[in-house]
Length: 431
Image (tube, rainbow, N blue to C red; front, side):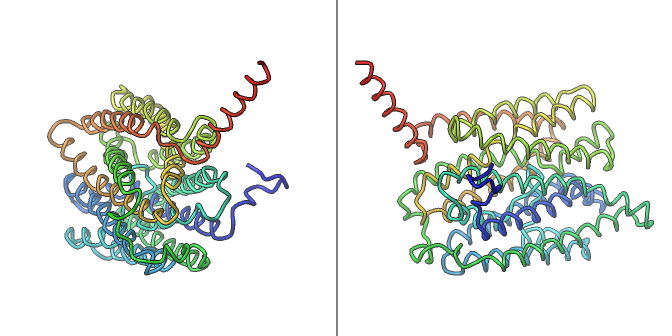
């Protein structure tokens, strides 16, 4: 991905680079604790239902603050909110280090938006601000490529974070720490990286705040594209519900219970799955530019659900891991295409609202997912959540395609017009 001058990514400006770097650092931090979170809560003596409730409340916190973003970002300022959310997460991580009381931990998870995410990288109320700001930092024809870079950096951070989740074992061996204390040390590292993210956001220029028409209170119900926004975000809520049912913390718990895998085995497994995901995201941008954003979103997603089912019923650990890795390669190929699509089919003044309502919907669905998983796990079987997740995700993909197949972003409309003009010119030459 180079420009005519041969300089790689030179079309990405300074603000975009800072935002993308902060995103990578955040996903690294979230993933490093995401793998161990359920195991840590189990070590504290909490039940599987309590673990699910804790994870759900963290996602609910993301939804709540994303809703605030949609209303107030124009008045409060995007940069100020980005810094604030990083500092809140930092404070929450410090609270996790000192506090073991379940009710207080749940309150901390909500206030700090401690989502460990279905994909392992987690979500944050900072994300809609980032997504809404990025399209103005690069040429229109590079928008999907920009979101691909954004997603790849995030996924790389997630991959390295998953590998770092094996550090508690090293702490125990090298320093003689207890299992519980070795987990707590990870929360201090999480807090430190949140501070770095806050610093990077502080360096972003005021250009990300948008034009004067975007610096105001927003009423989503009065937006010109409100029907399109709410339909899309409702569908994305279903998608995130199904993804959060397969949250990385719970998958780690499942592999430990079913196959007896240790944290030392799980960390590299998740690391390689996220590496595969990062590679696939770059391929996704190329497919989207060739076959269309919506087609890429749908027709890479459905096979990933089938491989999740295959992993669920695999007879041995090695086969389950193999299917999980293939699923990981396919499962996030929709992400850059989705971000690009949602920013393209609404007006510039609607982007923060689109991104924040999308995050509210996704986080609302995501908040229910872990609890649904643990409830099905407890009452039906450990495999039931994965089957339900796969079935619902396929239903979502097909619904998205049939509802929005005729809603195309401007660049695809332009390409179709150019193709029609070439066909007409060729017919004219032949005649």
